[in-house]
Image (cartoon, rainbow, N blue to C red; front, top):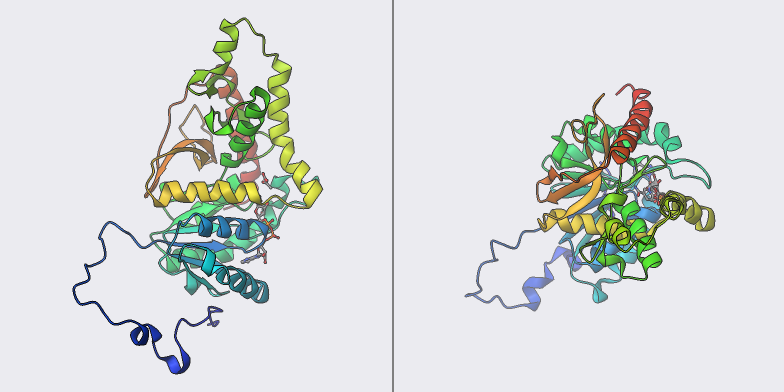
Length: 350
Ligand SMILES: NC(=O)C1=CN([C@@H]2O[C@H](COP(=O)(O)OP(=O)(O)OC[C@H]3O[C@@H](n4cnc5c(N)ncnc54)[C@H](O)[C@@H]3O)[C@@H](O)[C@H]2O)C=CC1
Ligand SMILES: CC(=O)C(=O)O
């Protein structure tokens, strides 16, 4: 068994210094039963894993954070670097090890390990390399945290969420892919920019594959509760189809653009995943477009496929899928997206 790279919390000679520094207060109230200890594990401490880890820390989402990677020096370096920020952050115990026992008892395991795209390369191209890694990652996570929720981020995220579901043997509500939560944020940013409003006031979803066959739900966009398309129609303002298509194309292209410019994407996915972690661990029951087992929803059939649908999330994972009204065109695009993912999945033999 590998030794944990965690630094010890005990003083010289193994003495627990907290006993020396503090006199106990005999009538202290017992810990509140409503405050639950939360532990998050992040697998893969590359650009994405570290952006997620640091957002989790700054947003005070966990009492314990465990990091795992295959590269022990990089792992220990990242752990120490985060620990050295302790004086500026909410208190979180940070451990790291190449041994999965460090993840034991996690409430949420976030998987970011694996190959990433080279400039111009599609997410689906990463499949074979990352499936092989998942066979060494998912079983130990399940062994050490049999009640955890798995949140998959590595690409191609929809197919790898399916792979994680199969390898884990978990019920589908406990296996979630970060999916189009990120694409939807990009979509909301671009719409907000176009209309000169705040992205947080824009409700808009991208569903389907996190990738080239994603589907923009134009019919459901609202700003501050006002449905955008019907409002513009009533005002007889034509929002040309090309403008809409251009915005969606930009959502699909912008990951390629960022990868072309800086080599990888990290900050937005960091915030996106921390946002999901908050909803899940704090049982917020918010609706997020994330990758879930989609068979049977919106006429999707033909096999077990994970893709993004607006899903309600809480402490037990996926609580349900919302019944958004889709136009016939949107339904057809969603089915095509499912077909694209299933075709890739069929090559796996899992
Ligand atoms: N779903 C989404 O929206 C997004 C997904 N991604 C995906 O996230 C993944 C990670 O991207 P980056 O962090 O930029 O890559 P990176 O190359 O910076 O980091 C990957 C890390 O995985 C580690 N790793 C490799 N094999 C491992 C194993 N068997 N066990 C544990 N750790 C292992 C590597 O040592 C490395 O530290 C990629 O697949 C990328 O495509 C990236 C951005 C957004
Ligand atoms: C890399 C990737 O999947 C993204 O930034 O959307």
